[in-house]
Length: 336
Image (cartoon, rainbow, N blue to C red; front, side, top):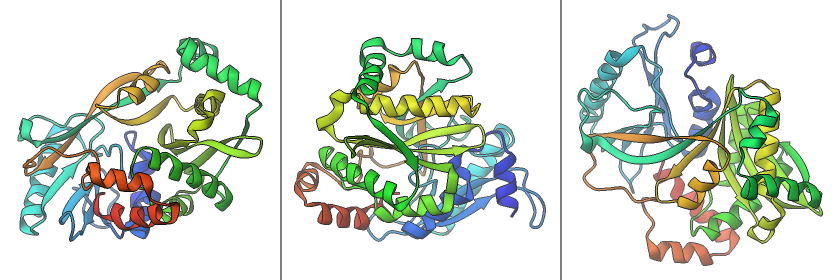
């Protein structure tokens, strides 16, 4: 398939560009993927941008590149191609009466044709350079909050496992439910993680830390060629003192380093989340700003969840697991 060949060879491609991620979006949320390219039918692709049509009676019809991704860099040739793609997609959204087009590039788009008002959201993104020796990486970690907790986890005898079996997905999801309730938000559907495991194969990895055979922390990473992204994390706050979360990140770093992957993407962070920002800074990462763009420009600032609010969050915090899961299954397809 020419899409897989193109993504597999392009230097700027990420796991989010891959067929596995796009298929999981379709299977879980019925988002319809397509791509724009200057390459004619039947020829090998030389440039492209994947997108999804999101059809929602609640939040409106729109085109997004891509739903639930931290970023999706257009795989194009230069600034002029970006301008042409923006013009084409803006006209497409207008002609087909979509509410808006949203782009989520890993780096800022060209300024031509883009106003300040088109910037619909901003986040931090953290990158960890793994080209230095492992000992030097460890020495760069914040001593009290990270190094000490990694050593504490080793003394605690935490058990580590990884994979994407149904058993491991269930361990992860139990912790995700607890974490999302703590944050007063519904969890992503269980089927989403099942579909990611099925469509992405070895590119998706779930890492779990357990104490006395009880899962206490878990993270999900996505790998593509020479890049890896930390995408989801969850934990049992009652066991944070064991150092379980730093323990998992350090195991991930060790494995990624041994695989000769040069950089870890620590994922998107809200600008108004100083705790998570500080945690990622403590790993010796380089922080940059991530900007999303909407065409036409959004009429008002976005909220962190879109359909939430204090009342909804209060309800999410008190729902039993079964109903919280149902809420996530109902809501997430409208907010991609």
